[in-house]
Length: 179
Image 1 (spheres, rainbow, N blue to C red):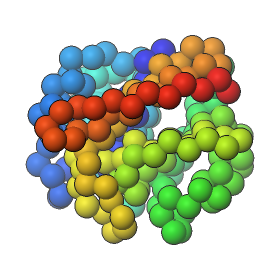
Image 2 (image 1 turned 120 degrees about the horizontal axis):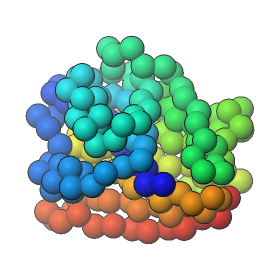
Image 3 (image 1 turned 90 degrees about the horizontal axis):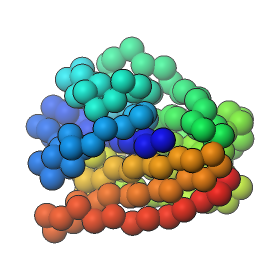
């Protein structure tokens, strides 16, 4: 199964739209699932995601005024995923708190955002942060690099592709996990 992991767009408050290279890439694909970490801030972003997949799972970010749940869990193939925005954790992106949330939810993978910096962390549980798809600033140490992830899930195997828009080009980092 092919899963798009995206979030923290902050459209139209901090960005007008996705960078063209990201928009073109996403619109040229079809995804089995989309997992969104929230802070869309506008329904038009949700409508856009629904054009990319029939199954869109979104959680509420601290800047969202749309009626999304605070957290979600779902199973993809043999893996259990949890999704939160990440504003529940202070300081932002604190690994020990994120791991604790993952264990409380009983998941193999916790998808989170809020930091606006992409990250892949694995110790007992896999923590994935797609960063900000628009690369906008946050209240913390944002990378300011537009980014998102594509996951390929097959049974207990997970291939993670982290896409970052650097110097006008989409660059990909790949990591594989058996969970």
